[in-house]
Image (cartoon, rainbow, N blue to C red):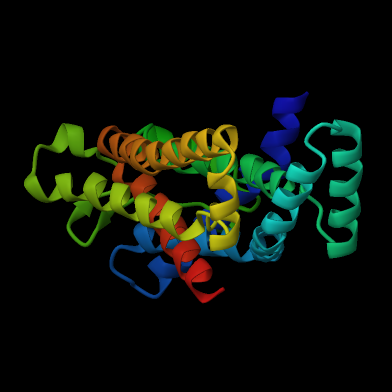
Length: 259
């Protein structure tokens, strides 16, 4: 039941939209039509989610501004958890902040990105022969959208192949670029560490200092490990999926740089 609902609400519409873009670019004889269709679909999804993304950015900024005040409350009421929680909720309410809003944005993204992954997987991982084309055509809303074949070439790169199987030097640049963009995205979206005054106050409290050092170490590890993980996926999975990841990363980096 849940799988059928996911298929109807997310997967099938994205599949149809990808084919619409593909047919459009084929109609205007655009070279690398399938690659541009992936880019267009990714940008479309990002634009649809943009209101949630902007709200998340605003909440992140507000939380950063509240950090010195929250640290002050933690120090003032460290022996009274109930009082601390009540004061924190009062501060959130006065500032118009909902701490759970960031989680909401994440939950909204999950089904959409899973559907997009499955859509690209249907085209790229399963191949692009007559059988796959027939399976895709069965899922399209109208016979007018039916495709005859899939041309996975995009500026001399086969989007259906993975760098691990091609063994051509320029394919190895793709996971490298993907990993670097993931690192830049994490660096751009990472919250600031707070004011100098807060840091000086924290230095007086050994436990708090240890906690901040641990958090800093975890953030540093995430900045390194996550890009390496995504870079490895880009190495073993079809290039078309890396194209999707890279467009998402570029879009996020540009938006956070503008804030």
